[in-house]
Image 1: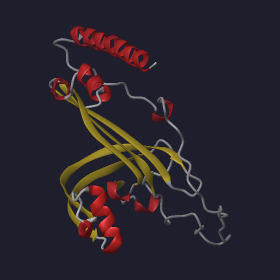
Image 2: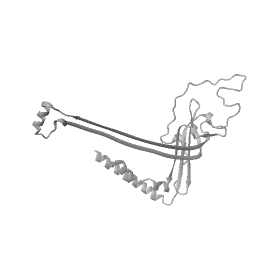
Image 3: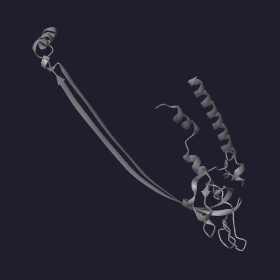
Image 4: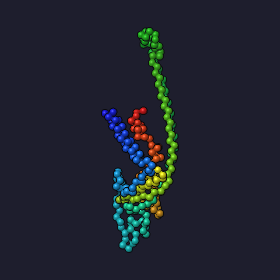
Length: 245
């Protein structure tokens, strides 16, 4: 059964590799094609966001007053707040982590026991003098473990991207998603940002910092000749997955 699974995996990999090779041969000399602009809610795998919601609050106002409970100001707010509105996300990622751990554990023990008198004489007689009764039992054990590990990571990304409001949650929070593709020569750089934001965190100039996005998903990568060279071949990936050593 295991051999059948491996054979099936190798067959599928070979077929996938053949298709990929044909696609690459067909696009020799051509730049990567940019994807068409699409509605994010129609893409495969899209699911509306569901979060715990507070109790709804009725929108009340006085008959002789311009103020209402849901108003954010007396004048029209030009910031994004409806499905389809656009706002600018300022993506700033500056993560640094440096962790170093070490451990050392050492334990040793020695136990010995002997027999004298009639029992010692009996042991001496039975063994023909090959066993010393005073050292009949001699046990020694020891454990020595040493471990060390370290992490030194530094990541930095600073850019801006326009995102579209795809959903307004019952409590007023906004679900946003933005995609950006930039092609330079034969390499396409992809930037994807999605998450949940509060309307009050959107600045007056209709921008919001990426640090204000809840459930943030930020992806920055690429595809093209440079990325293709950096990726291992399909055969190597299969071997890495199935080889036990």
